[in-house]
Length: 363
Image (cartoon, rainbow, N blue to C red; front, side, top):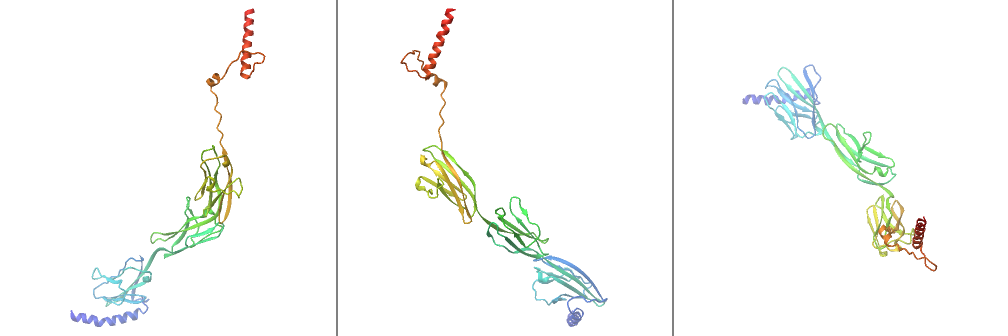
């Protein structure tokens, strides 16, 4: 056994020299003396690749090569890469195992088997697939209504990922095309919100990221409510405006800018986001009239008029019992007797009754 081992060591340089002569570039030679087969192996980045190779007998001399040179010659490892090892599950197997495969590992690998009768090569082309990954996307931006907007989404992967854009609205609109850049001409307030970029290929789940677009626009009054109140009671006037940035509110009395309302006048103004409320704790005669709500931000200003009316209590109708108790009949009518409407009506009825009675009696 020692002699044979020493003989193998003596033959190894000769084998390697012959191997290098036969395969000077790491690729199989085009010769009729060689049997060559080529297979493709697809592996996802980060996984382990096992390149299978089998020999016919134990005396075969085997080597693994790639474009960089010799990886293994028999059992001697020539590569310095710690991820690369031989896998031998049987005496006739001479497979190459590459752990944590990366893109740099892609390319042809050759298993060269030399026997006393012939030399055979088997080529495996390793294809490394990379899951999609968004490497760069636009930051959240704020623009004025009417501006042109360009959103960017850069992704990599193998195969090259498909990029799609989506505006995340209740209707979830998708944009046509597969572009890294999404261009919006003359953006409107309805086009504000979150935009989703999705990069997808068949290797793994899609990578998804979002960018928020804020669209500034001037205020518009969306709701205003006039009111009526009774003297001595509380009254409220409401005013709402839609705007970005949120509007600032001011209140004026009788459409006069010089009469700006403040809390010192017995009024209170409460502003919450897009709503402003004018509260009157104790209404007096001077509080009735026309009020102006003004909403403004850096892009514009708008206003609306509201009214505080005086509430008039309706007169309560008199019941029949009340009407009956308030009627006083005066039957004495003569000169100097004051006659009001009720008395006149009663007297007329009394005279008619007497006339009818006389007629019946005569008859």
